[in-house]
Image (tube, rainbow, N blue to C red):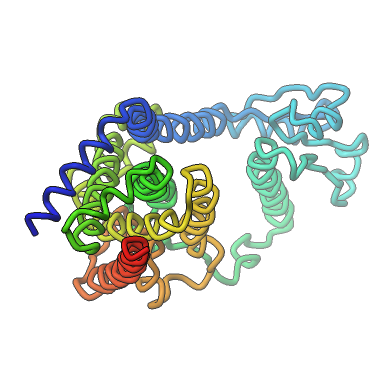
Length: 387
């Protein structure tokens, strides 16, 4: 183990010596947390302000004073739609749906008929589409009020039209609702571990071969597994350093939250950051070993970067299984590296418990992947030493 320690210190110093690359990785990882929170907070804040404004864009509302009176009683502000509102909705220049009132609205209402009122929006215009449901609810409220008035004038109790009462009950607690808004946090922390291990892994394997320093290194009396363990420990250390800084960056990043709702729901304190680091530790071991196994086959760093793209793509795509899978969490999720960590970090954000067997399953799968990759690297170095 003394030889492993010597190799570890040497590789760690070499990894930290490349200050330009390391500074770029650290800056992007540290700035990623506040940047994501600022963008998410800005989005939620704009949605909240838009909802609080209670603005209704209409066309032809002057022909329906009864409807205009109801809208005013609901404390909505009415704005006239531009003449080319359809074109502006298609081009996303108009951020509100348009309520189009027909010319014979009042006449049809007096005759007891149901006039057709259109809520015009575009599914490609997200801002307008988000406000379409609120406009529809407003018009349905007017329709219920008119129906109640009509049957009341005929001496019929309005309760007869409601044979049952329906109430919605949300079982999700505050933590589960907050996790819906902060589900991107585990993904960015996961990618920080990957990018933190990438440069160090490529430089300690393909970089050694390209510089011609691998053969002199193998001439030392140390066994190949000593070199592998030392290099692997150094790469994993750099990856975890970046992961710790990435997790810590979300703590002061909460100061940038502009939305009061998001600030109240967002749960990421020192406890959650510590849980994230514990869960990412075995993944850092696995990714460091896997990247070294990919790069040891390559003769140049450029070739290793091209091959490592496959690993980066796989790691970034695996967590998406939780997005496309609408059946909830599955037991096998905890046995897939990267997916297991994403699942467990999601539980932490929800405030749910993390049983020891689940964490041990994620740990075992990551360590098994690391052992297989390290065995492959040691075998390649042994062959290179013999040659």
